Image 1 (cartoon, rainbow, N blue to C red):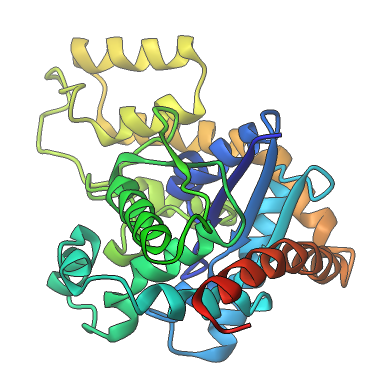
Image 2: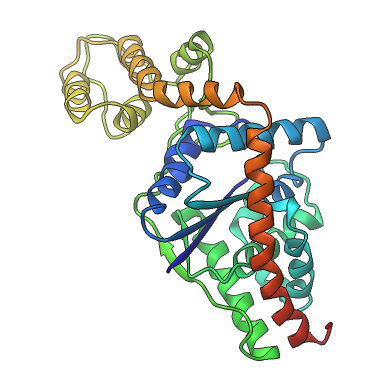
Length: 321
């Protein structure tokens, strides 16, 4: 059976960009093979420096994933920090990862340019990501185009390890999924917690309406046609509305006579309705104290069984056994 691996970083409240860009593709993968999903809380330490906050983000991310349809009976779901082999394998891989490879990482340069501290953890982020993937003998790692370089780096690190120590690590196949959407944020840039332009996944009604009504638009007069290609409202509407509703909004953009405020109201209504079943499931999960913790504990136990087998091979290969 094909083993598919992916992770989500709990570095803030999950938003609709996370859902359409990562979570929904994960849920669809459950039909294809053995899916491994982890909460990348070790990665989150590069940006979250408060212990209660990180614990809250991790728990809420677990709730959100389960509410959105992740099935722990069909998928292996756990918290990264509950499997210490991630950190062990990272160090072993780091001893042979060229500095030049890490210096070429686009994500590192972008985050530092945006003011994130240039820590060693942020710099070596791709090595931990490689460990995450290689620790489970993953066959396939689905990523969006913005993560393509990191997956290629993981493959490079695996090849370098196997050249040095013999065939030990499985080199995963890349899968640059067209389904992985790049979702625009309130300002038109990619929706990202680091940009502060997100629409959180499970906002209450009034805060959700306020966020959507704050979408940045141009100064086109009400009576004039509105651009469709660059419309953040229309791009988000495509994700949550029916094809007929989307077609009508596109027609109304092109015809003029409808203001951005009206389009935003339609977007709010479609968004609220789209996530209604998930809000109900999340409320049900919250009513079962301890359920999420038990799911993560059970997942970590299963994950360590796989990880320890891989680490036995790695330790023997490098001379640590």
